[in-house]
Image 1 (tube, one colour):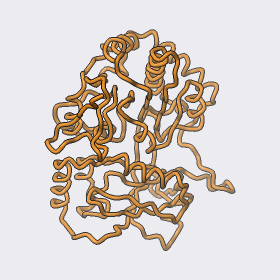
Image 2 (image 1 turned 180 degrees about the vertical axis):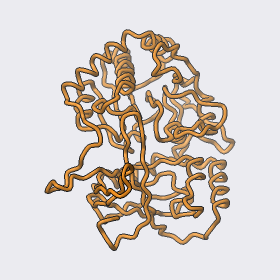
Image 3 (image 1 turned 90 degrees about the horizontal axis):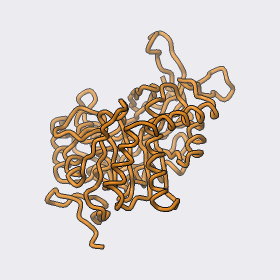
Image 4 (image 1 turned 30 degrees about the horizontal axis):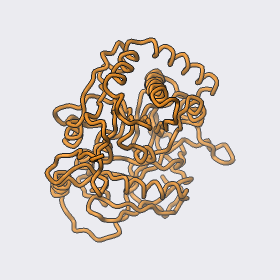
Length: 388
């Protein structure tokens, strides 16, 4: 039950689970600022299919930038954030930062715990997620919104004067985390997988202009069960070192974006040359001169990238020939994007990358986006090249 008896906004509570932690998110229902004709679920799903088939981007850098600017303005409880959906309608989302809510315990339904609306987040929804997201058979105001504002809920220490939040999992000490990562990075450098990666980069990507590295959903080095995190981060360091050698130690911008990252991660990552950035800034950093890594994310990374950029290199799960039920699905737009890339296997001796592949753009010349920032033409083909 919310602590504000006059707050009757409909919201749903969801859990985002990984091998490291279970994060609780609250998603409210926005206010539709323009009137819209009532439709059935079937009609709404058909409309989503129609919008997708038309080539309209579900994700654009302009929309992400507008949302990021509002989040950066540090809104407080009671403020409003406005976004637009796929139809152009304006949605108004209520900010609840600092407010509290009581939730039942999953272990004991009679027990209640106080949680604080702590951090603003974004729920990214592909076409498949939108079509399957109609709650209780109703078409809500957020029906056509691929980006949905949400709040991370953190358990509160009710006995503390300022209601400090209690972390779900122990966060490692900075020196311990740094030392453990250094050991993992050294182990990674000695693997055949790492050697294969370096060989592939030297052989097939030496002519691609790359000045930026972005890692999405890599996890937290400071939380338990961080083996996969350490290996992915070590891979990014390998790529960074390769680029610095190639460009005679010139600056390469290196970013990591994951809502699970902590203040300890920020310090440790800074020591190895990476900047920890908040969602959704990472999408704004991706461009045609980027190296992107994303392994088993809880968001549709491939679909977002397909709409907004054509990075030089993408390392992620192999794109399937058919749609699959996944948080990061292989959609028609993703498959169309990948037509412009060559696939390289890791030939991995490392279980972390058994199902991960390297996509290197066929053209060394960075493609030029359309005037609206997309890469899809009316005929459905993409990747027109700069004439330079």
